[in-house]
Image 1: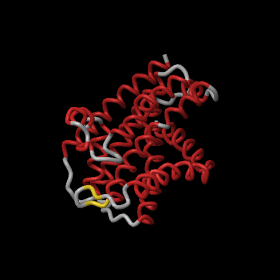
Image 2: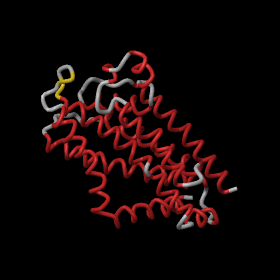
Image 3: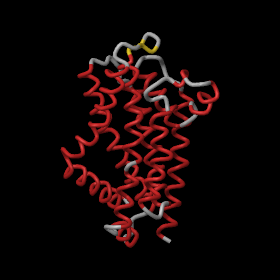
Image 4: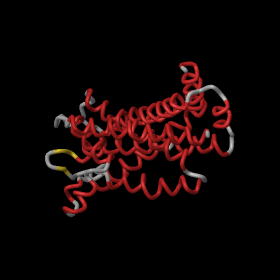
Length: 245
């Protein structure tokens, strides 16, 4: 089981290494554009309470990017299924379904952590003053774990790349903007705030920001993200098992 896990995860790491600079540039371009457009173009002289907008934005970009990077593994899994037929080879091997799911989830977490370090570096250059404590990293890991689990489930459920694109356009993309990442949900009408603040990305964004700004953490939010992640990981395992059958 351990060899199967190492084999799948090592393959993904080799792909990441071979893509190297291209992958880093593709990851960095989005937060840089958001920082320029929203941090400087719109919010340079804006404060959210007593907080500079840059310090408000950086944790939101981290939450957004870890969500999108984690979920993006679903597209790569689809390629291995529909074009390279690597998933069929894995199906024919003695690799346990749970081990496969775990390796793919860890791949999503790894890619999201690369994103975090890039954004932290960009934030440092932008003059942000944040605290990267233990709660900050736990919130990031839980967010990445949750959306990596959702990604595996989505990849095993969809039938075409068009279906995959539809999921991204109608679920992930709206959450990226409406999850408290680039503006406070309190600015919305009460009914919209009430609806959106319970999105997983909203909870993760709030915890990442609260930890980074030394506002404290809500342990119940961590429990919620962890339980939701376990739930979707179980569904992902079931979907892989069904695909194997």
